[in-house]
Length: 438
Ligand code: CTP
Image (cartoon, rainbow, N blue to C red; front, top):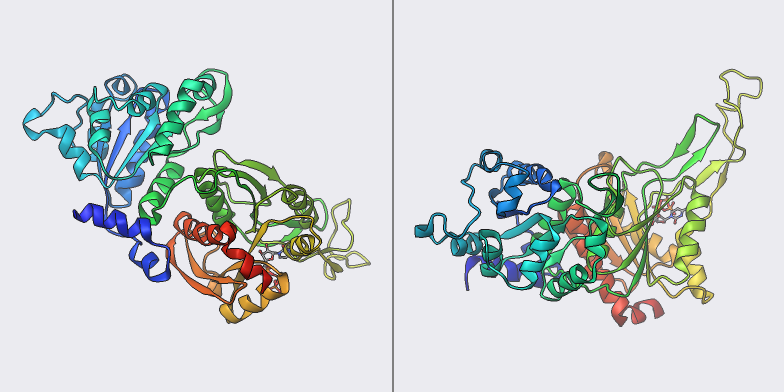
């Protein structure tokens, strides 16, 4: 077995603790960035940078029409490698075979309707499609086109064919397209594409395993107003919740995110997003979406208390009632606990997953919290010394209601998200029934 095939197998089969540690691929990757002929081709330059700055080796393989948008010299300078488009360049090196065989990952961004159609049909009429046909590594396509082209049954059939064969076709983002039209069809940002592509290699197992599942994920921090300019709230970037949403979308789920305050993150393409501010707003939105959900994940950092009254005018320092120095707080509802109670009352049958960020004794406190909340699983992490908030990586332990504990090795938040989903899928496929009855 080739080294590359062995590596892919390691990652694809990694579900247990030891296997996951093995599947954490850290060595630089040989990445082929394919570029097809669409206006978003300029964003491929940023994508090349994402990989080279992470230490990966990049070969850019544009289609001939991509060079109408960005010149070969730009791709050569950014990647440090020569750029060819046809199977008849450098024939002595048999490029269309060599480039595909050496690749650990192929990412095509933008993937136009025509390139998607040619790959689905197994064509090999340029260097890019020939490379894809030869490759045995993961292939990730990031489509970009007008909404009508994306929604056309021809394109949708081609996408379904490719996904059935194991090609990862990312959801296009929703937004401004060329000209004045808006809708699904926009190329996601380079960082989003790179994060998903890297996860496919590091976490492996990227089937449509959540197809038909309705998933609700809360993310970010809630805020409680003191007056029109001040609030109390919890710290959270929303990154882990968004990464969970990204993975769920690409495993085929129908995903609703209920988001409080998040860093300026790009929203995960393909997910619906409901924006809320306070804990009570979040509870209303989560409860409404949970009614017919299969899985609910509370990744949000929820403000436990709110001021008893919200001042309608800005409070001033040194006023007679000294309202600012002595805030009277009342407890907010516990959304997670409330979901478990709804399930006990038969109002939802969702698998319920929570998060816990602890500074001391994370495992012991996590186990007690899981019991108190009535959830099926809790992802516990240590935030001692301000760790994790806003960071790109995470680690911790997944504790189950059956008493199980699984180490989640340090990794990018998307990779951690993929591992959390592997565990949730086990519960949701029925193995969880016994957990819940315990
Ligand atoms: N949570 C919730 N509603 C709340 C508080 C927390 O749904 N009012 C959820 C969080 O989204 C998370 C889990 O409960 O999934 C644990 O949150 P955490 O703040 O750690 O728990 P608390 O019950 O607030 O306990 P602590 O005293 O440690 O803050």
